[in-house]
Amino acid sequence: MHTRLAQLSDVSAIEALIPLSVRGLQANYYTPEQMDGALGTVFAVDSQLIRDKTYFVTDHDGEIVGCGGWSRRQTLFGGNNAKVAEDTLLDPETDPARVRAFFIHPDFARRGIGSLIMRLCEEAIIESRFKHIRIVATLAGEPFYARFGYMVTHRYDIPLNNGKTLPVVDMEKQILLS
Image (tube, rainbow, N blue to C red; front, side):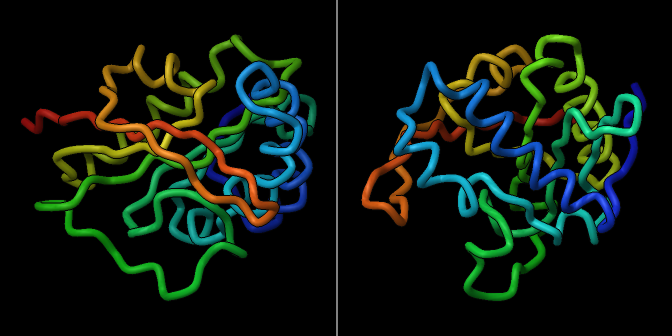
């Protein structure tokens, strides 16, 4: 397996991975209606992350089996279709960096792909001089992020286009800069 920065040419492969990951790894936490309502909006490709060179993919034999990234922009979650305005830059002195859009192929879950991508994200966030990080985590993702020291700040529901809601967890972590 090889992990690298994503390229715009990876978008179609990432778009194919997302529903496999969501339906395979989120099914114990969300109903089919919630997953369907979130696919394409909450669970979607944000190509700004790729253009900013803050999004990683892991491939195995030429197939993308994992992805995730971080952002120095205002958007907390969602893909290209969910944006209504320009995605402004954050101030590392006052704003938290965002960890965003982690998706792992179910056949490759629990093999360290997500952990590797998280470490790469945190290293880049520290290099960018952010003092804290914010994540809008899925219920399935909450234990994963907790292992990295992220603390729950609050829980809420994201309204979906199909009239359902998606329960999520806001999590944060302080960074000690040297």
